[in-house]
Image (cartoon, rainbow, N blue to C red; front, side, top):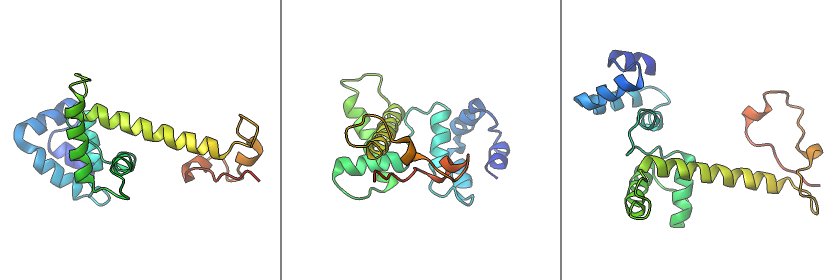
Length: 157
């Protein structure tokens, strides 16, 4: 469905997507895409913006919103607030990092959060006195698609 919408607006490549945005169709495109079932949050639209080179775009997914919530010391942050705060933080940090854009900060936050999750997962699965994860404890009988089910539970007993 999203592909049909993009085609309708003549946005079949990132270049033509950018042209559609620049021609005043940005709000119409956003409305059409977010009207598609499962796309109501606008995350996919924002990701398209980032991929098409919009350096001001922020994709406030769970990784970025969790980072912002943690930084604020709160449990949750609405995506709209998260996007605004990442843009504002980018502007403040630009004095020290002149090439920093909201999209680059978004990506840096996402990579940081991903590394945090991986570190927590690995640390959880390490046996006391051993620097290597316990292979026997990480094994799964769920088959080759087990990784699609999410992180493996850690057990160290």
